[in-house]
Image (cartoon, rainbow, N blue to C red; front, side, top):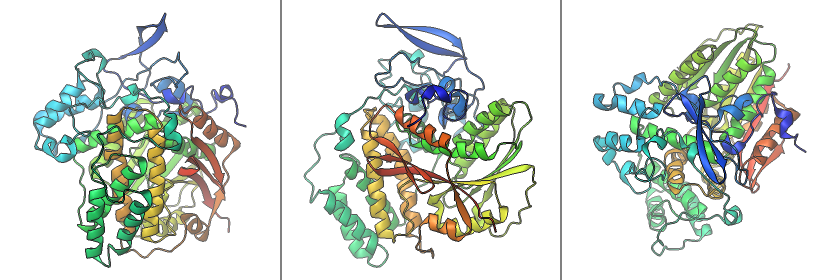
Length: 558
């Protein structure tokens, strides 16, 4: 039985008053706009903006879990009524790496757009991209992914300019309601009826993808034939969840077969950030992973004021923005020193994204008066660098993702030498490192189908959903297929078994962490999500299919 929500107030990460309103949004002015329903009409009143202001508050993740109720703007839960829509001011973005890549005459426009300073970002982005050769790439000009409607489906001709500032990044205006039929059957995107397909059944599609994965290295001609047939059956990313997931896996196999790699440019980064934020607003997956991991870290940091986080899964750094604010609220009586060392593979991490994340974390830390030292190191150096022993007065934590399994033996040997206070590991649910490539693909296809079903259960804006799939989920699928297909010798065991083999012991999540996870799911405005415990992991599931899991580990005592 989860604890009543009121008992969470002031106790840490679970203090959020409404999950559906837990996503921050930077306005274009220093004032927040609150809407209050009176007599069936809405009135606006202005109140001072919350501090601190940071682009991380709005672009990446919820702020400190202790302040979610005040710092996360958004829509009230379905049927909840009465929650105010709250916006947060957005701070400056440090993007030094953009100077050489963005045309000079567009630089200020793009930065202003991200910062929420543009009067009408939907018009501004059109102006930026339509005058750039990049805009004419099919990724940006195709239906559903173009920039004609950068407000994720909001028609800028029908909305006053004063109400659309920051719509590209501030997607917490997204309204959504439960789609009951989608919980069990999964609704499909509203599109014209597709052309007649050959053997469109789920079994046929899955079997063909698995067969293509089996022969893609040994019989390229057969793989080409299978993928050509799938190209006819899955001509576009529309339809039911399985069909859309299969389309992206088919595309990833095509890219693998023809050795095609995707590159990130400043324009696609803007869309990717917007998709990331929109996904945060629609799905509880990111919040579940961040809150659960951070709670385990906070409990292990008790009594320490010098903290060092070794991060092998940095993303946009939103987890650390939330953690920093939580640390300030808990330890405001003593100065706090935080160091973050990021290990990133040059093959899998774009320098532009890493620079964006690094600059914004520094900016956020300066606003809340935390001494932050952040550095990014190449994962290729992991086996050659010498690492000094940590002080007894310093807490060392490690953040790992099971997705980095190809490097996991090397990473765990390094972590074992560090003897950290705690290790937190996130598992996206689509990783089965003990399976061969073709079976791993089948498992991942099932997992992503469940993810799409959970997204379809929310009647969100169609354009927002398409952007989430195109700029967030599809690149992850491509990376997963590429990583697992590489001829790297890897032990055929689960990542959990490897942790145990390398000398790590599981740590049981506290009752508070479990109650917090249950509370988050209960406040999700759609039914179908639930929390499960499996060994030492807390899992967020959709209809019995795991979406993401978090576990904690420590070095085993000798």
